[in-house]
Amino acid sequence: MSLDILAIAAHPDDVEQTCGGTLIKMAEKGYRTGVLDLTAGDMGTRGTPEQRIEESLAAAKIMLVGHRDNLHFPDARLENTISARMTLAVKIRETRPRVVILPYWEGRHPDHYRAAELGYEACFLAGLKKLDEYSEPHRPYKILYSSIYANVTPSFVVDISAQFERRMAALLSYRSQYGGGEGGELFPDEKEIRERLGAVARFYGNLVGVKYGEPFVVKETMLVEDVVAMGGRSI
Ligand SMILES: [Zn+2]
Image (cartoon, rainbow, N blue to C red; front, side, top):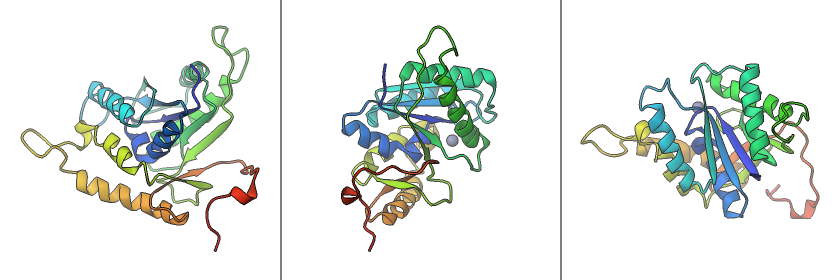
């Protein structure tokens, strides 16, 4: 397997809220996309890990994601251990992504910033020839940090105006998280979720003059080949 882009996230439904529009857009361009969730949400108030996984696979279909996997690391107590790094590094060697999306390295939930650190270090390890004798070394070329919930200036924003509704539909397939109880409405929280996600996506879209956007940060300086083709109006 060789993916063009792999999003690594702490919990099922993180990707749907942070970089799902970008994944959909890249799949529409013909790129092979994948998602690797580190935990199955076993500490979540609502739903079981089995439900969350099932819902995440339904969401993957909606996001046109060809490959989605879950490492079943412990939820809410994710740790950057050598065994976690090695497990993740082997997955990176198996899926061979050119681009990896990680959560931003600071945040409220410890799992999110641990996932960022764990992901970065696993990407590094994955490139070491002698890491293990069963898999070929592979180091991703590009690491993008999804910064939608970090109050930082993005390095760039992806226009997801045409993908926003599909991303919303993917998020709502997590019925255990956003669905109603027995006999109630299917998605009582839908209006609130739609407003919140819409406002955030509009904010980032507005920074680049489009309707909806998803922000990313890269640690290295961006390399540009063609300054005439650059998007984002200056004045
Ligand atoms: Zn999360």
